[in-house]
Image (cartoon, rainbow, N blue to C red; front, side, top):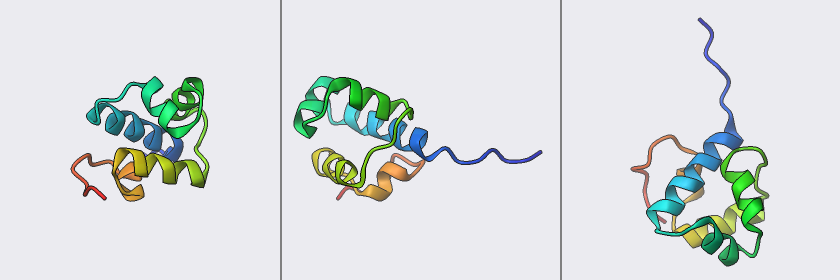
Length: 80
């Protein structure tokens, strides 16, 4: 059986959502901090759209996680 390809936007989005929730933030709160709409954050979290490099940087700063953590499959990755 062939292994399915890795869906980077979906993996990233799910991790953003998990880390946002761990930080105790709603989509509205994080989107305001990132200066984007709640809808934009929602489509990133669902993997429908991928974030730009500058937005990834801002997400990491706000959530206090390294970019590697947002692309990994393990929530026990190191904080920034």
